Amino acid sequence: MGHAILNVRQPHIVALGGSLDGGQSTRHALNHVLHAAARSGAQVELFDIASLNLPLYVHGQAPPEPVLGLTRAVRAADGLVWGSPLYHGSVSGAFKNAIDWLELLGKDEPPYLTDKVVALIATAGGVQAIQAINAMEHIVRALRGITLPLVVPIERAYHAFDADGTTKDPKLAEQLSRQGTELVRLADKLRGGR
Image (cartoon, rainbow, N blue to C red):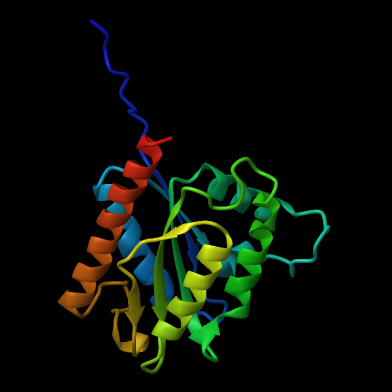
């Protein structure tokens, strides 16, 4: 009688996002999702846009070490969390630049974000955070990833968190927690099929 081989490796979840302007709300939201993912058994890692200090992406340019660290982590990830503030109806330029560096994954086999699930969060000072979510969904599709159906647009984000990152709205806290749990569940299911 044969024995089943169990995949005991923890799912690896990588978050990418934040803001260059010192705003904390996107980073706080990402941290909430990562905490929920860790409670669900995942190994988690955060790449904060502000601390990455990435140069502008230029096709063919030699990637600096921060880019190599980011692309190594994304390559190894089972799931991702992306978070961007809304800038003029889309994602921030700094966030898009970080995503553009993922072109380095284009020659991988499988390429880009194939078989990776991506959870999406957007923050806005007003009420149009969904526009950044929509932009990120198009990017995920272009990179052959799978978007987690539960997205979290956070409107009037400057009111959403205390200075220490505590969520002021219990409903938002529940959404972010559920997103982290669902991300791990789906990422684990997808990697089980590999």
